Amino acid sequence: MRSFRIESAIRGSIYSSDGFMLASSKKLYKAIVNTYNIDPQKEELFVNLFSIYSKIPRTQIRERLKKKGNVVLSYNLDSKTAANLKQLVYTLNLYNVFREYEDNQGRVFKYGLSILESGEKRDYLYENSMEPLIGYVRKTEEAKITKVSGVKGIEGSYNGELEPLANGRMEGARDIGFNLILNREAFYRERSDGYSLSLSVPLKLQKKIERLLDEENQRIGAKEVIAGIMDAESGKILALATTKRFDPNNITQDIYSHLNVSAVEYAFEPGSIVKPLIYAILLENNLLDFKERFPLYGGRYRIGDSVITDTHSMKEANAEDIMIFSSNIGMAQIAQKLSPIQYYDGLKHIGFSELSGIDLPYEQVGKIPTPAMFNNQLYKATVAYGYGLQSTFIQMLKAYNIITNNGLTHSPYIAEFLIDSNDLQYPIKHPEPIQVIRKENAIILQDMLIKTVQKGTGRGAAVNGVVVGGKTGTAHIAENGRYVNRYNSSFFGFAADPISRYTIGVVVLEPNTQEAYFSARTAVPVYKKIVELLMSERYLHASSVSP
Image 1: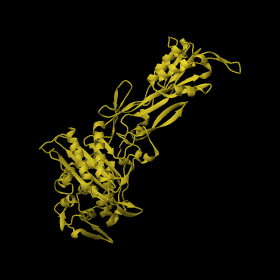
Image 2: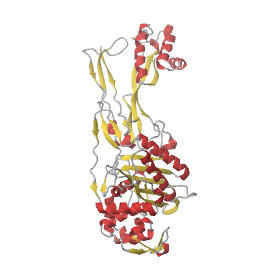
Image 3: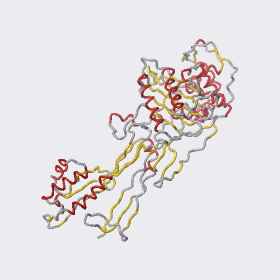
Image 4: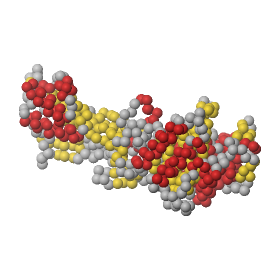
């Protein structure tokens, strides 16, 4: 009599760019025996041998054998144990452990020990490292086999590529141990597992960034700290880390908020980090005159019923100093030069209120005012220093990369290539870069960001031997239509040597307001340590020559 057996294919693995396996699937097996078929005189022999081969305690096996009929002795056997138990079947048959049994309807049957697939288990080898970037899976039942499918993170966005392609099938006659005989009359089709995926993120760097953020947050006391590093010339993400991580091997209800990738799913008012991007729009429209000087009114400037204030009180300043010393009053005046449509289109062109294109699910787009709202002087002013619009971390990182990369925009990405069962690699195609602002304008902005670090609000980010540019931002948090005594602080910019350029961002969500919560005391020191880490890990090299 011919019989068949299905061998389930499994989900592909996920690897870091430095070759570490981050997530993998393994097959699980179950052991089933019919207690009526075990010879009572040889039950103890069965218990002893099964315990030795399965490493399941004898007491546990005896307890399960108290149930009559088909009994599942284990659902969670790994492939090695399952193979050993299949060998045990021959030994048990040799010692006649199993006997025929006639039920009360006169039917005679004899079943031995059966080792069958029970499902698939997803293992995350480094626990909370690279999370929530990798994501997690959910379990489903399919023909009494446990399957897994991606939900969030890379597991979710590349679920279709990682999923099994085709199950294997064996068909033929059975031997006395109920195993299929693979002879010339048999049919066999090999299973085809899902593609594996290689990421752009090196595990070694990511873990060190995660450890750095954890240590710094002991000082900052923030709700969450997010940091990202983007290779300027390609758009690939080298690190995207957070202090809110979780172990996908053990998801409990109390860490549900950690499952979200805040870098793409949380939009916030960015504060002063938006100022270089407003300058980019002004430069593209030929509206920025560096010779023009603007009165700063002693640190208080009124538009209608609203008063705009500056932290650093100056009598007057040109456009460069307004940026370097982060004058809100100066930005409020300069922004009036933009027409409503220039303002709106400029923000859209840079990437605000648009998907960044990163290969992660559930990305939010934030928001910007409508063109009509930009007819209001106050909207023009407040947006220029980062209020009245919302951005995600990844949108801001992409926008700053336009400056770092001489005006070219890249869609950020995390997955680099697929790997088939023969270890052949297939590069994942990403959008071609687009020139968003003129190169000469990008170079002007780079120079302003460098000066901001050399002598302005970002002085704490300077690192000897490499070029560092960036902009600070500290923004009140709005709640129920009012700004409350809570803040987000940020620092975005770049670090470069003569060969390499990286765009880097740090956002500190709700630092401890009892301590210094300004960017210079929170985000800037984290940023500096990230640059120093890039140097110690040989991504950047100290040089006295400007790149």
